[in-house]
Length: 281
Image (cartoon, rainbow, N blue to C red):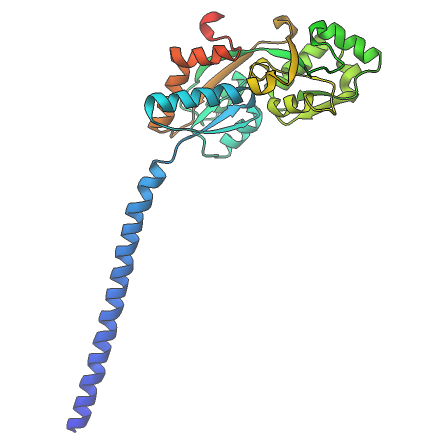
């Protein structure tokens, strides 16, 4: 009988130890989870906000973001693309905090649908240029008249513009070609960039004879040294009114960057890349 009691005691002790072991294990896992939350949450909070910027801003905003970091110690992540594509992505919940569009109509649409904090601010007016690679056959200084002559002579194989379906600079290029009566004649020769930055790459390639792209890109040293270009008349297309806004839920760093773009220092950077700031309208 004593043996049975002793055996039962050992069994009970074993069960008690097993329960205690499980509790300690669960407590340890809970503590580890708490420590991990304590480590990872600040990291996520400190992640730089992402700016969705129209491709015409590529060089200007890279420059501006660098100066913002120098002055504030804060950083932003830059994502370049077409304004229309960004509008769709923001409407679908993409984690952008600042939206810098090349067409204010896209900002108005997102504001109306409730995705932005407000109607935003006009930060720049853009211009377009006729661009070719250096020593190409097309003379940009001859303007759209020169392009018409080259078309008539059969000297244009491919001509690059941004896709007017979702790129504001593509719309402006199409309007400029229409204003010169060239749209129908040049359509078979067109190659479309997904955005104006890609259109500029196409225009400077050996596979194309030129294109109509953003002045801000032409002024960037990386492209300027490879290209010949000339401004097209402002009246050739509707004004490229570029508006920016904060996406709902934007953090403090995003707000600081937004204010920096609109500051005197920010406007000075934009002016270096050919943008007309609102005060200059």
